[in-house]
Image 1 (cartoon, rainbow, N blue to C red):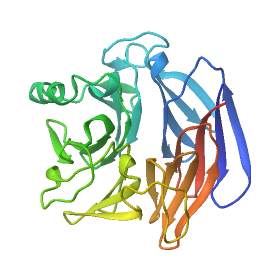
Image 2 (image 1 turned 90 degrees about the horizontal axis):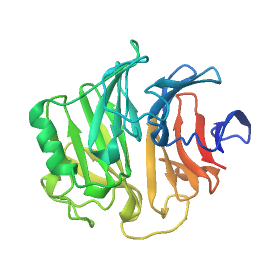
Image 3 (image 1 turned 30 degrees about the vertical axis):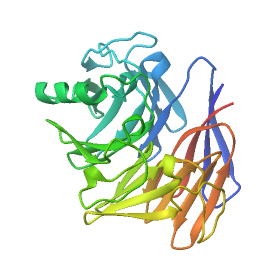
Image 4 (image 1 turned 135 degrees about the horizontal axis):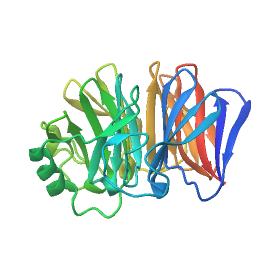
Length: 290
């Protein structure tokens, strides 16, 4: 069973808004504004829409029908949509174990491809060997950033090409003058805010910020795993991250935590957490496998 739980950050109040049968496995959720969310169901090759506590399934793609067909809600087919990110006009979805990135036109409920032919070839050279994907996605204007854990890189897509943005691909921890030569270790979370890019450097047990062409650590200590809060915090494999109103929220082991100038705080603890997102009123939507 997969459960969607709403919780106000900083309070003990919960609101179980729906329960989904075990065979409908949710992988990711993204906040769309108001009380709306999109959810990915890779096992069932479709996207669901949650609005005012009501679930529309499938919203795009045909339930349990795999494919790679552009179209609207009546004709589109999807191939294991995994991670999803929302921009101002479009959403973007990582599919097929990280080999494909597709565009969702939310207003018209339409899915299409993302790349030109050159980028498809480059994408295949980067990701064609992947048999699994761990990572996350965020959008700034026309740029889409994806933390690719298996590649030890952050990739940037601009609609017609893909760039190796941060990370040498070798794994490990280092900082170089050119970001593509710096080292990340299995980065699985990314969030963009006010010109800054925050990366959950999962294998290095820290959160790093890219700003003004400089990569710094803003939470945790590189290569030191732990579960310590406050201003001298230790993290344990941080994952998905979201920045809201200058506060970072992220999955860290079996907890959802926040970081700010006040240090590290724990918002929620459960060994069943799959994914989450948070709105600008500090309402967490948590996906759990129960």
